[in-house]
Length: 209
Image (cartoon, rainbow, N blue to C red; front, side, top):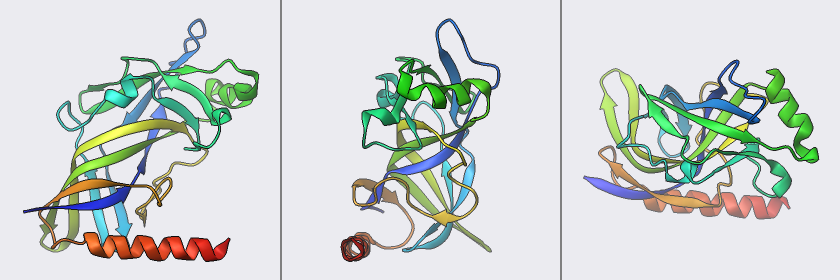
């Protein structure tokens, strides 16, 4: 059995590969996913473990390999937030790990942030991604596990603190923008509940302005 629900873009921890800076090319290598299992908290389903399946079949690399942006803390509202880009064709899966090469910007406005990355002062990286399909499984005596079997990284960001430090509300990015996700197994269709929750959140945000 499968259902379709709406989810926002999500984020996960990643890292700059140490000693990978190429001064001549002004590039650095990053690990944008290891597929580690993270504890998540959803206001719909409570706690669950999310496992990203990392292989050529499960990960859509098209956006990264088309020169996806390297952003300052997932910000997407100004060109100043772009401090680099993924080198076209460099994103790949190696032994269950996602890696890529990032071209750093030489623009004066990005110089301070790029310098911190080059120095190793900023080494935390986070990947923003969309889930296309997730497989939900109940586990006796444990919280459920959600195996993300079809997902698409959209951007990579330099961040001061890793995005997924333990259990967090399942979000990341603009929650008003959601995307269809196919759910395999698990509970009955919750798409209407999701829509109600999203409308409630939007109304609260409107009142807070």
